[in-house]
Amino acid sequence: MATLPQTPCKECGHLNEGERVYCHNCGVKLDRSHLAEAAAAPTETVEQRQRRVKKLMNPNAGAKPGRLMRNAVQTLLLAAAAAAVINMARQPDGVPEPGEAGQIPPLASLLGSLAKAPPNMRLVLKQDDINQFLATSIRPGEKQKGFIKFSRVYTTVDEEGVNIVMEQKVLDHPIHIARKYALRFGSKGFEAHSLGSHIGRLTIPEVLDPALDKIFEKVWTPLRHEHDLIKTTGDVETGDKEVIFYSSKKGAQPATAAPAPAPASTAPAEPVVPLPSP
Image 1 (spheres, rainbow, N blue to C red):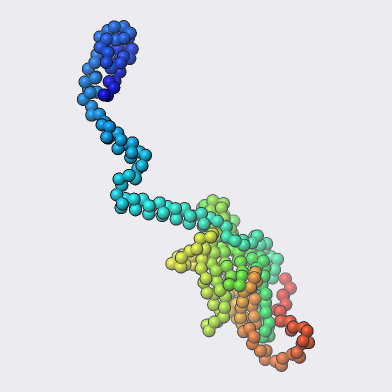
Image 2 (cartoon, rainbow, N blue to C red):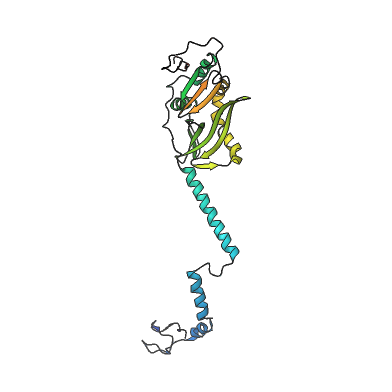
């Protein structure tokens, strides 16, 4: 049985139980007209109440399979998007400290010396030297606007190739946009074969390479002269934190007579291009 609403006394304001006809406080007859409206209002049955409580406890009960599938897909997409953003914001392995400008001779002078060197000469560029050169050649502008600001360009080198990384700051948080290249001399001369791109620790699909090319234009434009000089060298290889350029194809014999063989206990030293004076 439904409980009747309380009835206020118009004389003294006392709230009386719905069943009372006279005020429990002052004895005045109560106006019970509102009780008829309350009785006419639809009441919730026990079955309806059970269904309502069950739905509150288990919202997916009775849902159609299609709706459950849509909810599951939406949840997975949101989780994947969140994971992608987190991986983009994470710092990759092996990020070097910012290089200081002006500590090595210009790269153009080194490559120019190699171009004039006899066969089988080599030029070894350490990763730190390359990064110091990049710090000299590509610097952030003094007045950058917006919440995305260019910070620096650096490289990491291993046996597979050279990783060129542009560091941007988004709301002062560093974001590392990287493209890795395998360097080689093929039938058409010097080639830089792309090995993939990353933002932070997130691998970027190849379909987005054209967009990354536009981002990296500010890297290649200041280095066009050095790129042209690299084409004049004979060969190239990469190792652990170093890039080695050769004046001729590796293993090519010089035009002059070969020197006398070294003693059996001493391996012949490979000649190295001397660094020009700063």
